[in-house]
Each structure stands twice: as structure tokens, then as C-alpha cells.
Image (cartoon, rainbow, N blue to C red; front, top):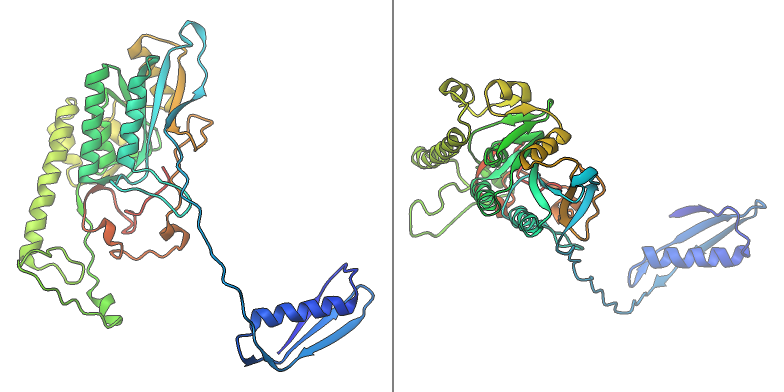
Amino acid sequence: MRVGVVVAGSRRPVRTVVRRLVGLMALGLAGCGHVIPLATTFRGDAGIVADATLRGAVDVKLPEVAVKLPSAIDPGEMTATVVRPGKGQNARARIALVDVDGVLLNQNYGSLYAVGDNPLAAFRDKLDAAARDPQVVGVVLRINSPGGSVTTCDVMAEELRRFQAETRRPVVACLMDLATSGAYFLAVECDRIVAHPTGLTGGLGVVFNHYNLQDAMAQLNLVADPVKSGARIDMGSVTTPLDPETRGLLQGMADAYHDHLLRRVQQRRAAMTAQDRQAIGDGRVVLASQALALHLVDRLGYLHDAIAEVESRSGVAGAEVVLYHRAGYPAHSLYAITPAPAPLNEIIPLSYPGLDRSRLPTFLYLWQPDPTLSRPTAR
């Protein structure tokens, strides 16, 4: 093998450079006891060409190296960062901006180098921080999420109800790009819903994210051979298709969750008629303008309009706006979000529906056009 190497601007003696290059390539390409004919060409600034050839046995012994990864960094407790300064006589009054972003699952999203947040725990922490702050007069719930697991969304809605009951402070939802299914389930708990004019909402349905990997396993010569004491203990397994009875049982559960979602919407959205509910009963998502016509939202507007709604309900004007986030994550504007560190499966971008057993099987209040959408996203 001949390797050509050109070093521009080198002032070292030609022989020294060649010797070092040959040595480095020998270390990099040779294994213990292997014979590697290696040649390199060096061309200096003056056009001098030097060849060096290494032939013979190379025996390389490397010292043992201890590698210790640093401990994951804790981003710290929730802290309030001013993202809009106050003005006027109510400058000291605060409106808390609580962001709800990404897929809502009751899981920690961390990485090798940082501790990630659990969306449910982070939401409760933000509400607690707002409740403890005597300057906070109201909350804007900024939502940009397709939804999440049935239980996580239900618990988040319950935590929001508890916050409202304990603090008696107004809460206004601002729906951004996407606020569907479980995210809308959370929004209906707010006193008022403002939807971005170009956003999507609706998606009032349930998904059981089952995948049939039988053929994929057969390509790898893998055969499931479980030992079980109950015929249905592995119902919903990805190793086999759903038989009719199992499908019926799971469908019954999905229908029950769907009824729970629709009852909550009916209770909280008194302006919605039976015709409105029928129009979206199949789980479709709708544009914000359609959502307004169907009484899913109260008005179209922007984040500043949602803030103004809270000010009006609180009897203040010119309040400062604070975003609650982990101390280790920066926030500089009204649209900042608390980022989740990239997990290992994002660093190594391999995604195959149904392979991530930590998230399966799960009933989801989730608009899920992409079968890999149950993976974590930035928050």
C-alpha cells in the first residue's frame, strides 16, 4: 500500500517529518505481529520528494488506559427568568409562562452527559414554582405538543386543576403549532384557550401503538417462544399479529379512554354542541379557524394576546412575564423552551417502529401520523 502525504508550509527537516509520519501510520494500521509494507511520500515547499518504506513485523504494546466518564450534570431546580420586563404601575406583578412541549410521556429523557426532565415531573415543578411566587397573578400555558400517553396527560390535567383550586389564579392556554389529543385534553382545563391562527388542534382519539414484528424477526431467524401461565398475559405482543379476541379487548379499552376524553371536553367546553362533537368524533385534526367555528377554542391570537387575557382576568397591566425552567438551561425570550438532552437513540439515529420496548405497549392520546413519534423531543 502506498499513501501520498503532502504537508504544506512545513519547516521541519524532511527526514524528521517522514520518520514521524511513517511511525504514526505504522501505529495506526498495524496489529501485533502483522507484516505491513507501508510507504509514504512527503513533498515539501521546495518540491523535495522523500520516500520511506517500512517492512517487517510490527509489535505494538499499548499501556492500559482507564477511561472514566464524568457524572451526569444536574441542570438544577426550577428558576424564574424574566422574558418580558414589566412596565407601569403593575411592573412588579408577574405572569408565569409554563411551556408544555413535545411528546408527553412519564419517562426521564437524559443522555450520557446530562440529566433530562420527565415531562410530568417538570410540569408539576413549574406549577409549584409559580404557586410559591407571591408576585405571580396568573399563568399562560404555552402548548406545542401532539399529546402523549393517556395516563400522563390525565395526571397533568389533574395537577393543573389542583393548582387552580389552590391558587385561584387565572390560567390561559396558548396553542402554538400543534396542540392535539392529550395536549388539547390539558388545554381544556384552562379558563380560556387562545389558538395561534396557523396552528392545528383536535385529534380527540386514542391510539394503542402496536406493531407486528413477526416478519422482521423471521428475517433475523428469531422466533418468540414464551412460557406463560395465562393465555392473555402477553396480549398485544409485537411478536405475533393480534387475534380477533385480543383486538376486541384492546378496542374496548381504547373506546373507554376515548369516552373519558370526550366527557372531559364536553364538561369543560360548554359552548360545544352535539353537532360540534360529532364533527370531530373520528379523531381528526383541524385548523385553528375550524377549531374556533367548532368551539374548541375561544379565540385566535398570538402569545401576546394570551398574556393580555391573563392580565385582563387578573386586573393588571404591564406585568412582567417569567419563564420557569431549570437553572442550567438558558432562556432569553417568550418562545424559549427547556431543552431535553439528546438521548443515546438520538445520537445514534436508528428508529424502527416497535423496537423500543420501554415505550410499548402504550395507550396514547396522541396524533401519530409518524409511527416513531413516541420518541422524546426537545422540551
